[in-house]
Length: 339
Image (cartoon, rainbow, N blue to C red; front, side, top):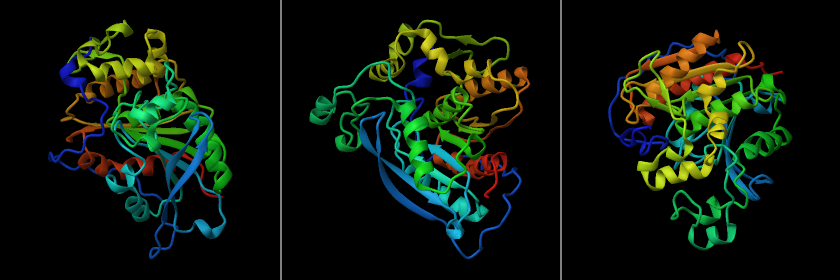
């Protein structure tokens, strides 16, 4: 079973003050076509989600020349457990990076709460949630912002959010115009959503993600010796409320867990349709670099070309902010150009 010491907070978007060696920026630059003196626009929006039964917040970055009338590819960036739609702008400085690259894409940063961007296996009681926080990962979280009527987060992203973006922005509204990325829990979300919906996304990136949900060892990683959890009822039993939360999201059917596990999904992925980027720090406090190496080896064995970085860094924005230029450049190069 996955060790409690390693995964007690494995999916949290931790922002520790630990130092790490900046990772080198090796990705080719995005073509500089936007005016140098202009910056993109960051806006906070709110829209109604049928899948969740409530309105949700979303942060939108549009490039400096958005008013030119062109249609743009869209990059969806997902936050981690305990995070919010503001994290990529405030912690990752993604708008500043996009401006520096003169990124020719729209960036969408939704509020994903804490359900791993999956449709939950258990229902929720909206009235109880609004009354005292029942059903929330953090009962003290703002209830009006976090409580939902139906916790269908996969449908929220793949149906409601994409439809809202395509209706309200000049997008390239097909898979070749969509990429998705995330950190920690959001990295997991980006991988599983793109692999489960290859018809919607052409590229995906995971920063310090939960790249192998059922990875149970060894620690450190050894190729050919990987052990995977086979009993969902045992997952996280030593983790108390944390383990119970995850089991509440994915349920007791191990096949459901497997259907969301990026490392399992990668074993069924055909080479070509989906461009993938992975990274993780070697000092990751939650040892997620082990699962990342397992997914990397799985992709290699499948002959699936992907970008891969494993190097100095912790599970924090000091590492992620160094890698944001990499994922932005990677995704934008793999998607259709503005037209």
